[in-house]
Structure formats: structure tokens, C-alpha cells
Image 1: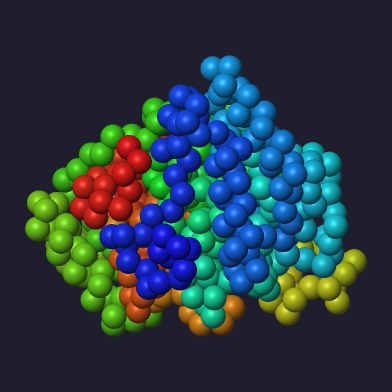
Image 2 (image 1 turned 90 degrees about the horizontal axis):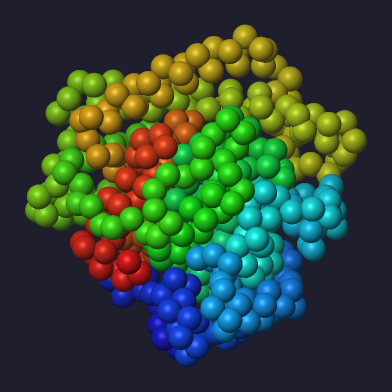
Amino acid sequence: MNDDGNITAYDPKTVTLPSFSNAVPAFTNGSDTPRAFLERCIETIETREPEVSAFVTLNLDGARQAADASTARYRDGRPLSELDGLPVAIKDVFETEDMPMQVGSPIFEGWSSGWDAACVYALRKAGAAIVGKTVTTEFAFARPGPARNPWDTARTPGGSSSGSGAAVGAGMVPAATGSQARASILRPAAYCGALTLKASYGAINTLGGFPSSPSMCHVGFIAGTLADMWIASHCVSRIAGGDPGHPSLAGPPTLPRPAKPARLIRLDTAGWASTTDETRAEFEDYLGTLADAGIDIVRRGDDPRIESYEQDLVTLRDVMTVMLTYEARWPLEMYADRHWDLLSERVQERVVAGRELTPEDYAKALEWCVGFRARHEAFADKADGFITLNQIDPAPIGMPVGDVVYGEPSSLLGCPALNLPLLSVAGMPLGVQLMGFFRQDHRIVAKAHWLVHAVRGIDTAD
């Protein structure tokens, strides 16, 4: 998108998306206000939403009221938090007291609990201006919604955080919430040219929404800059806490300073076999750039432990299918009992598959996960993290949500993973994935900061 708001071919070196953190100093000195910042977002929504269809519900009056209150606080020198005044969109799998939660299903049309999910409540407490609810797929995994890719509206934005990726990629809001149990934060960010952190499992409170695969469900923020991504994640994690039994994100409240990786393990995963030749070539060229910059890139042929780990990543796909299907038996069985005819064919298939699984099948999958996570963490003293792709090709034409394969490992591991929109293929965004170690989110974000800021220079928000 150029300065006039017109769609152009995606170029990671020149694309800039709205940055809330860059605007905060102007709020403080009075040369700008949260209300004026919000109005610029609303202007973009009015321009792009008719074609992108990122939102299922808008609450612009409520957002304006919140922005006015934030403006008054900055004028008085007493902002509530680093997020005070942030225009933010909420994926429609989280409860909001003032809007329905419909999870992409006719079963929940118009339904509202009248309460906020933990992450939404934390955003309100921080002073954010909640703009609306974004489109998701049916129950966050099945039938796609109407959202489209902002870089080519003939293509999918990915799922299941479809509208959140589209809204940020279109520049409508600087940040939006997402949730992931397979690839539902990483993939939309990758397709739409946005940044994201899928934080460590449990680091951001998931309570107050649709219960998607509880042992793997993560909350994350899709954002236009690394600074907005990290500040939103950290602030909400500190206010809402983590999930029960899990601590909040460690690290500073502001974006960790750039830290050059010394060594990264390059992963094929099970996705490489399906990845297009053009995407492979672009990624390999990028890895060459990193090697030229002095970063040691270690591959599966360099270490038998990495080769064994790569084989684990193939097995992981079957294990994850068992986990997702078994954990979805409630509430999908209950929905099937009451409204079978309102479920899509894919949801019906998952209900039937869940009936065939036994507690022993699930126990075996859980046992495998314990061993796999230990094997992953064993690399912590061997490398700074892992680098791979987030997609097998650019966003496909049509509305299928795309292949989940590159997003699966970090979901099952529970480790932090980022999408860095550093590349492009066929004029569309191509995402690089950086994956770290459990509860070491701030450290892998510092490495991501170096890659984005020092190598490509597309994010100047330090």
C-alpha cells in the first residue's frame, strides 16, 4: 500500500503500517491526541473495509469515547499504561461486554455474555480503544468467513484470526488480538504482511471466550510494528496475568533491544515438501543473507539431533490431530446434539472423529508431547532459536484458509514464535518464522528485533 492508500505489490523494505508506540510522544507533548490517531484509523476503515471485510461488528462510538477519555488523561499527564489510547480490534472468539461473540457460527448469532474476556478486560483497564470484533472461521478452525487479504482481495487472509490479520495488514488498526491452536495467529500475519508474537503457552490469559483445544490454545497480538506487538503482549499479560498455573511474560515493558543471533537452527519441518519452488528459493536466499551477516545457520545434515528433531516434526502432525480432535469433543458434541444442521461439514467430521478416539489414544499423544518438548528445550544451549517459514506459498486465491503445517510445531510445543514479514513472492507477503524456547519470549523477540531492524530496516519503532 502506498502513501495514498492504494494497493501496490508488497515490498518488505518499504511497507509501513500504523505505529501507536511512535505516536505516544506526540500525545505526551500535545501535538497529537489519541482521538486524532483513532480518527485516522477510522478513515482507513471506511476506505478499506468495504472490500476487505475484516470486521463482523464495529463499535466506533465506544472507541471514540475511550479515545476521548485517553486524550484527557494525556492532557493531564496521567495515562493509564503504555497502551492508553491504542485502537485495537478483538478476534470474535473473545467475549466483549458491549458486542456479541459469534465465533463464525450461526448457532451464536447475536449471542453475548455481557462480560469481557480476560484479555479484553485488561485492554480496557490499560485505556485501549476497542474498535470492533474481527471475522474468524467457524469455531476458529472450519468454515471461512468473508474477510479478504488486504494486499489482493481475491486471496484469503488466512485463518482463523482472519479479520485480525486483514485489519492490521490493511492499516485499519495498529494491533488486533488473535488466538491459535494450530496456525491461527502465525498464518494470517504471514499472509497479510503483519508482525505477530504467539507467546509461550499460558503467558497471556485465554479465559473468557470459545474454548478451543485448551492444552494448545494461545492468545497473541498481530501488529504493524514489533514495538506495538511486544508492548501490547507484555501489558495485557501483566494486567490479566497468565493462564492459571503460568506466569506473565518476562522482560521489559518496552520492546527488547536488538540482539544479534549467534546461531539459528534452520528447520524444514513437514512443510518443506509442500513448499513451492519460488518460496523455497526466496527463503534460502534470505538465509544466505543471514550467513553473510555472520550468523551461523545450522541445518539438519549438520547434526544428527536436528535430523531426529525434523523427523519428530513429521510425527507431530498426527499427534496434533489426535489432541485437537479429542479436546474439541466438548463443546462440539453438545452443539451437534442441539444444532447438527447448523454445523459445517468440517465440524461434523470432527465431531464424528472425536467419538472414535479413546482416553488411551489421548494419553499416548500427551506422553509423546512430553518427550518432544524436552527434546526441543535441549537445544537451548546450542542455538539462539529456530528459523523456518510460516507458509508454503503466498496466500492462495479464494477463501480456503491455507496450509497450517508451519504453524503446528510451536502450538504443540507451547514455545514463543514470531512472524516477521521480511520477504515477498509474486508481490505478496512471505513470512519468516523465528521460534524460541519456553518462557524466553523476550529473548527471541530481541533476536527478531535485530533481524527486522538491522537486516531489513522495515521497523524503526525501537
